[in-house]
Each structure stands twice: as C-alpha cells, then as structure tokens.
Length: 111
Picture 1 (cartoon, rainbow, N blue to C red):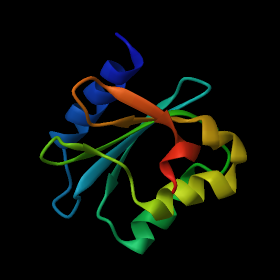
Picture 2: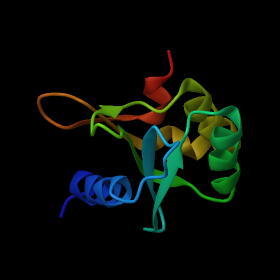
Picture 3: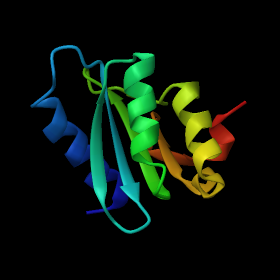
C-alpha cells in the first residue's frame, strides 16, 4: 500500500466513525511512521488543538478530506501553523485532488 492509499484508508475509517459536528478529517503521517486522524469542526479551537498536538512531531505527509470524501487543503491557519511550529514541516507531502493523485510540499501550498 502506497502512502496515499495508507492515508486514504485511515480517512475512510475515520469517516465511518465521524463525530456529528466534524466537517473534515485530517490524516497525518509523521516521519517516525505514526498515522493520526483528526476530526476538524473548522473552529479556531479545534484547529489550535490540532496544531498543539503536533508541536513535537515532524510530518511526512498530510491528507485533508471532507466528509463527502473530497480531498482539499487544510485551512491556511493549519498550514501556516505547521510551518511555524516546525520549519521541517515545509517538506510535508500534502495530497491534492486531481486526475492523478498529486502531492506538493506544504511550503508550496501557501501563497
């Protein structure tokens, strides 16, 4: 199973157990290999909780998926926050929607 499939599998498992107020699932894989899922209700509080939970980690990959299973970028607040807490996160592969699965480094998703 490749990296995209691994993260998508975790996202689909999380969607099956989604909390009522969650709008999207953010799946991360750390450089140490741990995979985490986070249910985001798009509130400032939830996004801050997400960022705090990764202060000690460097991410290898990130996938953000809406509950309708459409891939999207996480909010700009999350993307900038990940770079602020750890500049090495700039190399995190962020999966994008497209004909073929495309990943860009996190640092290139901030315009």
